[in-house]
Structures are given as structure tokens and as C-alpha cells.
Image 1 (cartoon, rainbow, N blue to C red):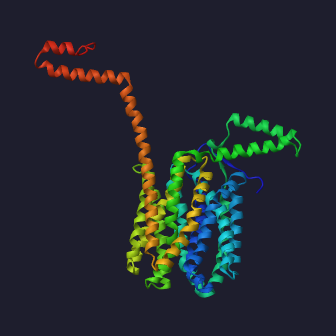
Image 2 (cartoon, one colour):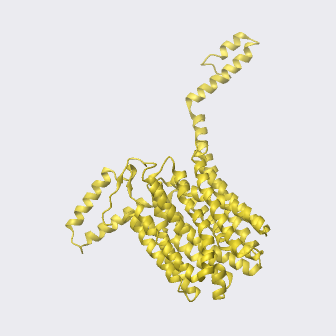
Image 3 (cartoon, rainbow, N blue to C red):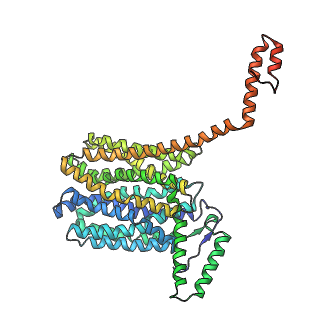
Length: 487
């Protein structure tokens, strides 16, 4: 693992070993996002066993999601400075350890630390590096590759939701967590598939190489404890971090970051409260778990079909708009949810929400790559995941507090829906303003161009001459002369 052979390519291969990278990322999303979603199936079990309210129990799912996203930049740093393989294998070990220790918990606080912090940290080391590797191997078919890779979340939810419910019934929640801990060890296998690749844009310029050679010579000449060594290390770290995170100053990325905060607040509570909400309206435990399965399988269809559609020539240039469309429709689904109080109505909701959830999840890395480029994609995705952290941490407990206070789920679901709609409108408004700023200088340039003005004046003069030609041919001839000016 110390010395890793890197495949060299001038451009993304769009195939070959890239499909193995997609397969590895597919398994990573199953072991991370699908397992995280299935924690909501334990919600009622934890609440009953530890005799706690909605808000206290919801912190378990919140902490897993929060730590996963909060530590995502750490996963990017490990991937950039060591290797993607090392990061994912280490993350798999940590996540498995957290689940196994969680099966021995005697209080919710123990679950906060094991299932929440430790497992979340392991998932963080795996998630963003795996997604970034897909972006390095694909360019022309990037949306389709991401669609297949991210569909692991939906397929995993579809398969694991009824399996986890069955495991709980057969072995209790402790046995189910223990088995999930062994399953998550498959992340180590996924890490082995992530062969690094060096693209043309990733290679340093001759000037950068010259600076690096000078710094290395200074480092060799300096003693380990000298001031020069410390300054060299500090300058290298500062330059490296400045290059990796220069996109943070881009206005487009700032707007994207703000919109992600609102989107993340809205999307998280459903995966925590869909099963408890279904149980509250009279749906059985198996049927409630079935709703999660439907959500997962339709999520797959959204991942793949939306990725394939937006890779078509007619929609290739509108992927940003498609992302806004998907986020906004998920928000509208939230607003309708309080009116759906039977299994026959909740099934169509799960289908619709699941489809557009898979759609915008597929396009999020594509939209991020469009803004920052592939060179900074790994770091940018780490920041994007980091931005999910606080909303993922606070939104389920806030929703639980609203349920405890009001006695219904209406206020919680409405707040989440409005948050997602605002996220979509914010990005749409920002893109509209940017287009208006681009078209205005062009309009002003046309007005200030002397050649265009001469052409315009000539056209006006010619039209005036044509009108006067019917009345007075002599006057028309004078007006049509290039040097003519009216008084």
C-alpha cells in the first residue's frame, strides 16, 4: 500500500477500468447511504427499549449523518495525500467497529458514540473519495456513470429494509446491528478496486516542478530541527491547501453551498420519520418497511434514468436546470405528505419522492464538477458533504420536537418541504442573474461598436431614402450618400 501504481491518461477513459470504479462506488453507496437509511427501521425499537421520546431517539440518525458529512473533507484529504484505497479500507474498518460496538450499547449515549460518531467517521472516509474517483474516470458519460454508482443507495435500501426488519424480528436489534457490522466490512473490498489515475490536468506545470525541486533541495540541506525545515513544511501545506480549496472563493460555489444547506435540511427527516409516520396512520410494521423498500427501488430508477436522460444531447446543457427541477418537486411532495394517511396513498408518494431524490443525488456531483472542474472535484465534494453536516444533525431532532409539541407530523413536513423549494428557487434566481449579467455587456458592446453603429446608421439612412424616393428621387439620392447628415 505504500507504493501505488497510478494509471496515466491524457483524458478520462470513459470506460475500461472505469466501470470497475463505478461498481466499487456502487457498493460503497450501499454500505454507507443505504445502511444509514435503514437505521430509521431501528427507530421504534430504540425508542421502546430505552423509553425515550422522538427528539432524543432521532439524535442517533442525526449524528451518523452529521459526522459522515462533517468529516467528508477529512476523507478527501486522506484520499489526496495517501490514496483513495487506503481511505476507503480504513473507513470500512471504523464503520464496522462502530456497528459491532453499538450492538452492546446499554443506553442511547453509547449509541451516540458508537453507531453515531465512530460509524459516521468510517462512512466519511469512504463516501466522497469513491464518488470523486468516478468523476476522474468519466467525462462524456459522467451523468450515466454517476447514476449507476449512486443507485447503490436505492438498491441497498430496497434490499436491506425488509432484511433488517426480518433480522430485528429474529435476532433483536442487537443481533441486527452485529450482522450489519459484518456486512459493512465489504467496504474494504470496495477500496481495493479504486485504482488511482493521473490525468493531464492533474500534472504540475514546469514552474511548479521547479519550485518543488528547490524546496526539496532546501529540505535536504536543512537539519530536522532547523527553522528552515518548519518554514518549508508550513509553506508546502499552505500552498497545497490553497490550490485544493481555491474554489471556495467562487461566487457560483458559494450560492451552491447556501442552497445545499436548505436542501439538506429538508431531505433528511423523511428517512427518519417515514416509518413512524406510516405506523401512526395505521400501517403495519412490514408495510412501513415496504414503503422504505419502494423508496429505495424507485430511487434506483431515478438515479439511472435521470442520469441517462441528462446525458442526451438535448438535455446535456440543461443538467443544472434538471437538478433544480428535481429538488423543487421533492419539496412539493413534502407539502402533500400530511394529507396522505393510508397505504394506498403513501405508496405513490414513496414512488414520486424516491424518483426525484435519486435524480438530484445523481446530478449533484455533475453540477459541482461543472462549477469547480475535475481537478478540485474530490475536495469540492468533501466540502459539499461537509455542508450537509449541520442540517443533517439538527433537522431530525427539530422535526421530532415539532412532533412532540404539536402532536402531529404536519408542521415538520411542511417546514422540510418549504426548505427544499427555497433551495431550488435560490439556485434558479442566481443562475438567472448570472445570465442577465452576461447578456448586458454584449448588448452594450454592440451599441459601442463603431462598425455596428455605421451599419445601423446606414440602414436607417437607406430606409429613409427608400421612403422619400417615392416622393422625390433627387432628395433620396442625397440622403443615401454615406457622408450625408441631416440638420
